[in-house]
Every structure is written in C-alpha cells, then in structure tokens.
Image (cartoon, rainbow, N blue to C red; front, side, top):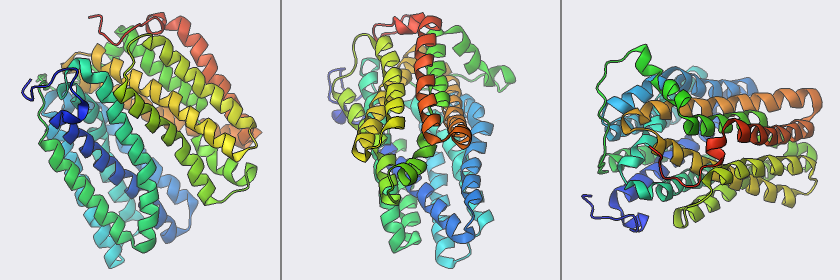
Amino acid sequence: MSENVTPATPLWRHRSFAQYWVSRVSSTVAMQMQNVAVAWQMYDLTHNPFDLGLVGLTQFIPAALFVLVAGHVADRYDRRRIVSICQLIAGLAGVMLAIGAAGGWMTRGSLLAVVFVTGSCRAFEQTTLTTLLPGIVPLPMLARATAAGASASQLAVIAGPAASGLLYAVSPILVYGLCAALYLTSSILISLVTAERTATSRQPLSLGMLFAGFSYMRHNRIVLGVITLDLCAVVLGGAFALLPVFAHDVFGTNSWGFGLLRAAPGVGALLTALALAHRPLRQHVGRIMFGAVATYGTALIIFAFSRSFILSLLLLAILGVGDMLSVVIRMTLIQLETPDDMRGRVSAVNSLFVTASNQLGDFRAGLMASWFGAQTAVMVGGVGALIVVLVGRKLFAPLYNRETFETRR
C-alpha cells in the first residue's frame, strides 16, 4: 500500500486513517452541538414542545427520501469528494445559523429549513462515510478500524451536547461558529485521505440500481441477519425516549441527572469501542453478537425495576457495551460481506433501517408508556429484545455460527 503499512501497524500510524478519524470526530461533534443548540433556540422562539418534534421529523424526512439515492451515488462517484462536499455545505449552514443568531432574524421556519439542509447532507455523508473505511485501511485491519471509528462517534455523543450546553449559555453565535469551523475542518481532512480502493460502478441510475442493496441483502444471509437482528431489537427495545420520565418521576432528579442518564450508554459504548480497537474480536463473532443483544435486553429489564440512580447509570453503561459490540460486529460483517461496488447501496439500506428502528423504537416506547407506564414499556422492550435473540438464532443460524470476520466469498 502507498503508506507502507501492514495489518500489524498501529492505527494511529496510518496517516489516512488518522485523518479519517479526526474528520469523523470533528463532524460528529459539530452535528451533536448543532442539534442541541437548534433545539434550545427553537424552544426559546416558540415555547412549544411540538416544534421540538418537528425538528426531529425534519431531520428524518431527508434521510428517508435520499438514503437510497445516496447509496447509488456512493457507489458511482469519489466517496471522499461526496463526504467533503456534504461537510462543506453543513459548515455553510452553520455560518447561516451564526449570522441569523447575531442578526436576530432566525425564525421557526428558517431553523427548520436549515435543519432540512443539514439532514439532507447527513443522509449522503453517513451512508458514504461507512463505505469509505474499507478503502482506507487494509482489510485485515478493518475490524480494529471500525471499532476506532465507532469510538469517534461515541466520544462526540458524550462531548458534543455537554460542550454545546456550556457554550450556548455564553452565546449561541459561539456554538454555531464553532460548528461551522469543525465542519469545514472535517471537510478539508477527509479530502486529504488516500483511498486505495474506490468505487467503480458506473451503471446508470434506475429503480433496479436503487433497490439493489435490498436485493443483495435478501440473498446474503449474513448481511440480512445482522441488519434484521439490529432492526428488531431496537424497535422492540428502544427506551432512550423515556429517560426524562425516569429522571423526573422515578429518581426525582433534574435535567443534570437526565444528562447523566443520557450520557451513560455512550460511556459504556466508548470504552468498548476503545477496547475493541486495541484487541479486536477474533473468534465466535456470531455468538458474541447475539450475546451482546441479549445483554442489551437484560440490562433494560433490570433498569425498568431499578430504584437506585447509581445502579441505573451502571445498567445503562452495560447497555451501551452490548450495543457497541453489536454495532462493531454488524458494520464489520456488512463491509466484508459486500463487494466494493455494492457497499454504498447496502450501507444505504443499513442506514435506512437504523434510522427507522430508532424512530419506531422511540414511538413504540412512548405509545406503550402512555398506555401502561414507562417502567412497563421498558421492561416489555427488554423482553422483546431477548425474544429477538431466541428467534434470530433459529432464523439466522449461519450468522450465529459465524466464527471469524473472514469473508467466505
């Protein structure tokens, strides 16, 4: 390879991966900071909780509309350029937010318009970013690189909201300006990455091409298994939307306590990602993935009955451990089981399912909580995740019996 690296080379000595990792941290921190700041500014403007829901819906709509097109684009054009352009546009959106905050002319409509633009960029960026990694590092390093890349996201999920809340108290202009700077830095870094393997597909756009990811997934039991297992477990076991209820009604704490509850899964996930980056999984990857989902479900069940704030923090951290194990195994297997000229479209299907599962999981939890209470909703979600493990073990036996990450093709 051009950077003279081997599978044993430390990840941080791989220049392109280091650029990729810093770029990913920068863009994800910017996204997390901007999400928090926009939500706060929206509520300051309207004092209507429904508008906060509109912010989330406005982010989801472009993902649902464009994710399949994004997969086709990722397989047809230079992936580095796609990510760089998306981050550049997101940076310009941050500049607009800063100017609007300074001028005092931001309205409900203009905030939603900016959110739609950044959500559209994210649909292309996130789909393409995951397909870029196998072209940056040697394939034997992919499992470690995937874990390290996931640690970047978790680090941002923990640090971004905290930093945004602190800086917003000083000035929203400062938050939006920093978001713009981080996005632009990320755009420059990703454009400098050296990719050894690039997309080669030049087939014309058609319905068959757009839905090729679904077709490939249907015929590959490993890819179908990891995506379906995650989708069902998150839809049935989604509980994060109910954490404010637990913070206020069960533990009698304030927004600071809620923040700790929301950060706890990220802490567990980050520690797991860092560990996997140094000591990647080498055996029993299928059983470990099913065990990780079972751990997720068990932690939810115990959390539902917990009356101790400290114990609940620990349980949420354990939940994060199980989630990160599942994410790393899923993303690594998807990349290794998919030909390079199909990775964009398969990644698009995965992104669509992940986005849908999170939204539907929150809706399931909220709806059930309104009927039976938050604790029952979380407990049922945990039981549902365990049922998914038991059923999935029978339906996707090749995935359960998968020993290593090495592709069978």
